[in-house]
Length: 352
Ligand SMILES: NC(=O)c1ccc[n+]([C@@H]2O[C@H](COP(=O)([O-])OP(=O)(O)OC[C@H]3O[C@@H](n4cnc5c(N)ncnc54)[C@H](O)[C@@H]3O)[C@@H](O)[C@H]2O)c1
Ligand SMILES: [Zn+2]
Image (tube, rainbow, N blue to C red; front, side, top):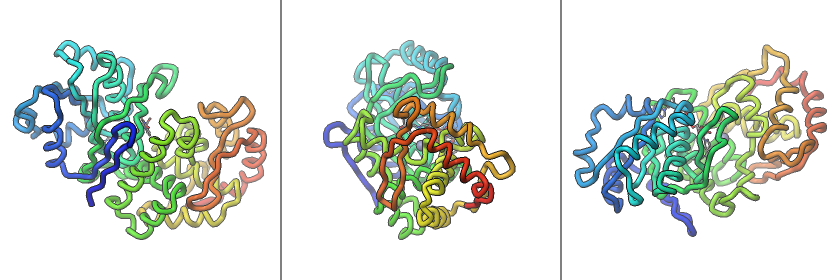
């Protein structure tokens, strides 16, 4: 089912469509110059037979191939890429197109935001995570030696075209990473929960619903002053678990969600999580802390360092009460420490 959602004030449009339609719509963009930034792995899999001159006969095209994944977001890549485009020749009416996962769209969006003080851009997301999350909402960034996403901007893409055929080549751990974000949305919104359960996990049904939800929230709270914080559900603990165990992002979000339900004694929500995972064909797993000491100190360290923290001694935690009912609670880190210590023994036996 094709699906379109437009921001009322700005102009992000998310559309599920075929590559043929994407090419047709790119040809209709009012520009004579296209700047493509493509993830290296995606180029390797899909680019070999792609002839830009043939598919975009009326446009000049400059192509930058990114190193695959997170390495795309290196500061040095930003310098090389912008130098490359500027040397080739760019004007204000050029349109940039990112093709890849969230790392590529974050990077390409930052290039688009800064090149000649900002040019228009669009995204062809090729991972589940990028389709439901990273390509939407206009947050763009690169990494620096001091940390992830520390140089960035808000720069909305004009269009986001999602062709789910790209997902056929996505490795299983990257699929799970995107599904972790889908679990988050299912907790946030009852109609997404219903879409997952009623469609038997069909991503064609689920992805547009998640995208619609994120676009709605980010349109209401573009600069992340309020509502947008809800999207952090599962991430306060998830970010820590991601670093401690080197987990794929969405998998860490899933464990972050589970931990949250466990600590706040939401047994019903834990069984919902199990059902959702099953429906999304996510195999049962032991927790990453199974054969190790439970990482209370490290989890607290990362939660305390979270950029969304409330103060030095308190954090804002998004706590689920029921499906479709979540609340932002300001909680002392000391209280979280006590909850974690009290649960360590039982958490060791946890399986989901
Ligand atoms: N801007 C935002 O609002 C926002 C939100 C969430 C995440 N992010 C960012 O997104 C990034 C993570 O995005 P991601 O999970 O998409 O990872 P990614 O972009 O790093 O891609 C993951 C891996 O999949 C490969 N890949 C991509 N598409 C493929 C395909 N169709 N077939 C085979 N392989 C493919 C890539 O080469 C890479 O190795 C992080 O940098 C994160 O900070 C941004
Ligand atoms: Zn996330």
